Amino acid sequence: MTIITNRAALLLFTAGFLAFGHAGAQQPDSAVTRLLNQGYALRRAGQTDSAAHIFARALALDSSNVRVARELGFAQLAAGDTLAARNTFRHVVRLAPGVRDDQAQLGYLDLALGDRTDAIVAFEAAIRAAPNDGPLHLQLAYTYEGVGNHVAAMHAFLNAEAVGDVAVRRQARASLSVLAGAGYAQPGTAITDWYGAAQYGTHFRDFIVSAQAHAALSLDAATRTQVYAVGRVIRDSRTRGGEQPVIYSDNYANAGLGLRSQPLPLNLTIYAEAGPTATLTKGGASSFDWRAGLTFGSAWKSARSGWFGESYADVSYYSRYDEAIGYAQFRQLRPISSASSWLDASLREGLVADGRGIGYNNLAEAAAGVRVHGGPNASGKVYLEYVQSAYTRNRVGGNRTFGEVRATFVASGSAVFLRH
Image (cartoon, rainbow, N blue to C red; front, side):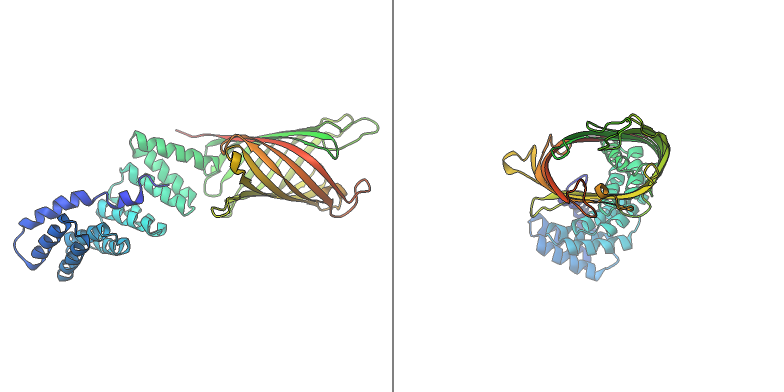
């Protein structure tokens, strides 16, 4: 995600140096000057390889001549030898370390060769020479993003927003919103997220609706630590309370306060929360409950096969049940070519396990079906699947396995309230 193409960036400064180099023909006669004039003539004639060879001879005669080194670097770049140009510009910045254009050119050459780490060093040096250069701050931010240093990227985007023009500020602010939405937000930033699901399965003929929402305040960007308020509710169509209750799903609503953090360099969240829980089933129990655990999520895409996927895992302890429950799901998706904008083939594997060996809390599932959606940025999706399930520890209702058709609607969203 660069603000200009790598090729355009590499040629960005060439025109100015051509004019500068032409003026060199007026210098007193010397071996270096004669070679420079030959190089300029060959470059004007379009003989870029020959020009680079002549400039290299000139630099061999005067290796401390910054101007000659620059000419050689641009000649090598024009000839398509990016690696040689990068090595030459490394020599240039050793000779003249405080020049913004030289350091920036070296950074773009590093990027063209896939070396983001060295590009960061070069862009940082260029910014030290030109601290109010908004596009450079923006390029540095994108380069930090490329190596996964989201916190450093956030600071660079903030600097770009502070010193850039209208276009730079717009790009920086949009990128900050993306980072903040992923949890990389400066302290004091408010973040909200919500999730809702509705599911019907033919085996139990039960319709289950659930929803939850968080309102969080960022405490630390490096660890994505947030304090939050949460509310959630779950209801199903077959559970009945009273003196002879029939429970298919726990029907309750709760609110709480919590803390969540990602202290490791992966998408693993540690959380803990507590608050009152109210039963929605007649005769059920209401109490003050707490829960704590770990959650993990990831996504991937294969350019070769066209498949993409997502995984999710949760291991938590729930005081309401005096029980630890773990859940893992892995889903693979692929657009169906005839309707790729809204329909995907879907495969899913899931596993549930608990610490007490309760039958229905220990289940393995495999599912195949389709996903209907409104595009990659749509908040809502519908899954229609055939699911084969197997209880892994005990029979439930006399059965070890069952199959069903399952329809699921899920929707989610988030909002970030950036501080000015």
